[in-house]
Picture 1 (cartoon, rainbow, N blue to C red):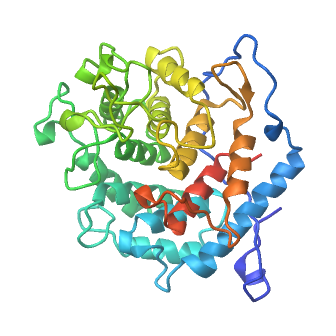
Picture 2 (cartoon, helix red, strand yellow):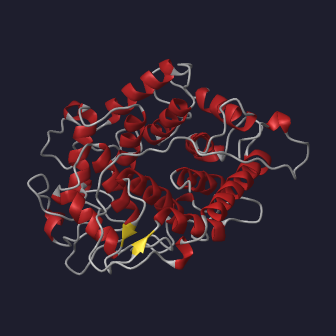
Picture 3 (cartoon, helix red, strand yellow):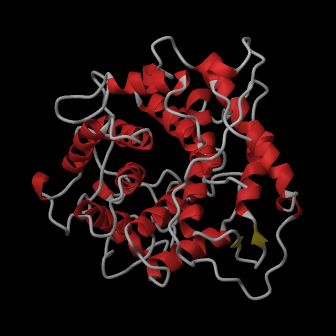
Length: 391
């Protein structure tokens, strides 16, 4: 099915559109070799391709209609009380599933984002404390819409800004410092893995790879957020949990949103582990690297689409979009859990999203932590997840 432009649809709230998925971020890396004794994929993942495709298109069409009719403000924004981040994320999601930039719902969102381009190259609202976060997301949206170089200048300025925001020698941090290479929300806030992964995503979208100095600095920070001792990770937290998973930040004494264990170690959790794996792949770390092997081992042990491992429902939709992007970067159609059961992860994620979509076409989390009670933000996450899960 092809996307039907808004101008070709009949008037009224009942109209629906369908979309085809845009190019997803795929990096080939054979991390998912079959496990001895693995069993067939689950029944939920064996639905006919035509049924999965139908569900996929239906979810996208209903989500687009919700965002266009109920989510978007007259000025083109989405949830503007939170800054430009939700608007840029919605634009990302719509573009990722194939909605053209000329469509009013996208064009108005991009127009709102562009109103917030700053002289320093950043893209953020007045008084924002999330300058780096907002700019990274805006870079991806503008890059996806930049088919004719229309946004070259804004993208160039944004890239320079987020690189300047990275913690490095410019802030008096040498490579031995736990802050080094990381990115925070903005204003030189304490760096964390989530924001660092958003920065890597933005640079990856622009075609920057393992030879990019900012990505390599970020990789050192990412490595230090893993519960795995290595020559590059000698932080106090590295040996306490030692399960190969990732936590929120090693900076400022370290923190995990999943808390600490009895040893005082920082507990790993699902969303940060997929963020760490994806970031390592984008930074050129190979499948045979101990860091990748350890991360994959944690994810095999904790494979699920039903919750954010070690976090329950907190950040569930952020988890699903990070999971989908990471497994797309892995490049394998199935992922075997620790017991050897093979999972057709795209189909399983699609099935979960289908059960969670609201009657009005949106998604929302009953656990409102990290703004997941906001249907605009969560629907953007869902579209980004769908973009990586096209049947």
